[in-house]
Length: 462
Image (cartoon, rainbow, N blue to C red):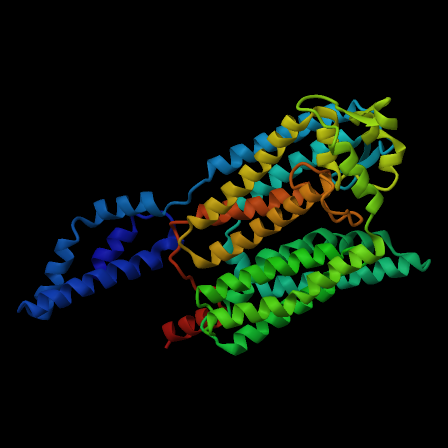
């Protein structure tokens, strides 16, 4: 039997799938051998017949190689590139409209050479970098990242805490070395990786009961408290919601052995206080009712194509929506990211806006579909967290852009299209590509713990 499995596995090029395939073939042969024994064969003959019934090991191995080789979600990649190109085209047309928010920003190439670029140039740079990061993330094995999830998460939380302290010292007049500032400031972006990393953290608690649940909740509270910096209340709430969603799926899949319904209802009821507090804070302190009303006003005059008109003074005065959205009255209390949908609708019309929204939604849906197709539960939970982060931000930004919801500083953005969080959006999509890549290669569960590997190593040397 072992010789048969060895020859079969030699045909499968993806080495990381060997253990799962070997275990499956071995179990199948053993089941067949037991059935042969029940029919009156001796153990040796029964096993030999069971191996013969499996067929030629080379042919079987070649067939399994086709199934277990890494896959590419070409549909996601193609749509991601299309969305990037669509975003660039949109930015090109919007750049033709005069705006008081126009600016030239410094762009560092390889961290050394500085050039000045306008908004569209910076967006093109972000799209190119985003797609590059997406492809790099595709090459990374998400199970390897999950294996080091606790260590990476702890480093990110520490770095982000130091970064907030540095910002506080700088605001107080202290001179911070550029090297130190540049190093820790990267945690501002990298802290979002806590969403996929959390899947690896709770996966390590698989099989535990309330102990695993309590440790998972402690991680969520720690992440929420650390990330809730100044003007970042909404971002922290979104991260916590994504973590809760991942924990909910994990409980449903019985990673943590607790009563499902009562536990899920209880943790969501407990953490509902946090987003409710954030929303109340936003409404009572710093949300802009003026900008919300202005967005509603502009959207009321949007036409199917091109710039629309808004009537004033009983209909005697008509002002184009493109003029309103580019006026200082509108832009003085809003930011580019929150009202990207408003600007697209005001300048290019409702049909173009619907097309842009549909393209981004299609990309997110493709991501969900790619995640759902994986056999590995770790990949499914990790991918669901990433997609949850994208869809929450997209829904909220649509609400802000149409005037249904207020803006809260710079936390609202439309994934892939806004000038904010472009690279991060593509990075999360890259994680989905990595999950899909191994959708057939990995079994339902895979070992990512150090201790079990150490035990195997020790047992092999005794």
